[in-house]
Image (cartoon, rainbow, N blue to C red; front, side, top):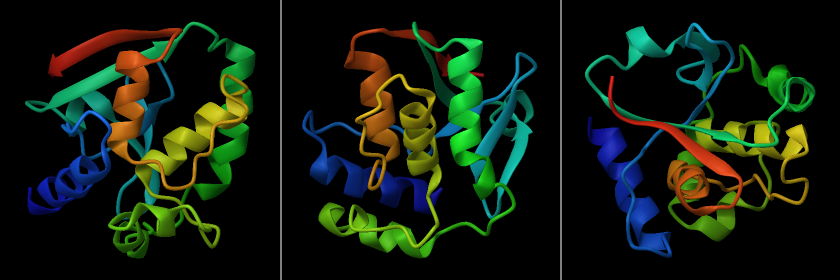
Length: 153
């Protein structure tokens, strides 16, 4: 998809490791694969159906308890049903602009970052301006994260 390649291109320009493979991020809400994602609207869908045949990265933090999960969800559930903040993608082309404010909107990886911050796992995590590569790098490189699965569904 052209949009996904463009997102990875701009992620790579700012990536510390000069790598960017993922162009989307979401939060898994249940064991059956229900996710919350910023699509055309911020909504739920099924991971296994939506990404069949595609490469995904699934990670979990050791401190993600049921209580932390609820706190994280409480911090982002207000976004459910909002239209996708596509205009913010242009701000991500110059990363410092994407960190200045959201106007009450968030792209997919910002939702994931805000979920992590509000869960209490990283209370000082600045979620504004986060991109999917930032989330993937957290899972791959930061302490406390376990990669549950990386590969094609």
